[in-house]
Image 1 (spheres, rainbow, N blue to C red):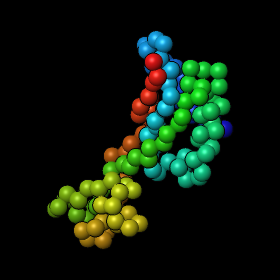
Image 2 (image 1 turned 120 degrees about the horizontal axis):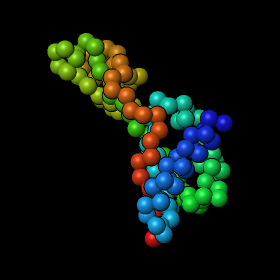
Image 3 (image 1 turned 180 degrees about the vertical axis):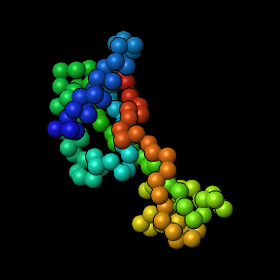
Image 4 (image 1 turned 90 degrees about the vertical axis):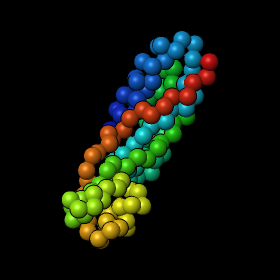
Length: 125
């Protein structure tokens, strides 16, 4: 249910953008989704299904949904004052299980990215 509501908002944003591009039809909708979002915890097919349902009867009907996982910033509390160790959650610099590659301490969340955002809409004219 949450996924459908979210995808309905994505479709609405796509429709709003298409108003300015008269005659264009979206073929691909690329979403950036935070790697820490519950939306990526399960099978992504639920997002695709919710998008397809939300897009029915709209200008986005038939467009392909692509999901791009993005990570937020993480910081090591031990190293930050001295070495400024900063990485991204989900990236190799954060080390295994979110540990600092410099000292082995735990990386903590820093600057966060939105849960979901429309990154790009590819159109056919």
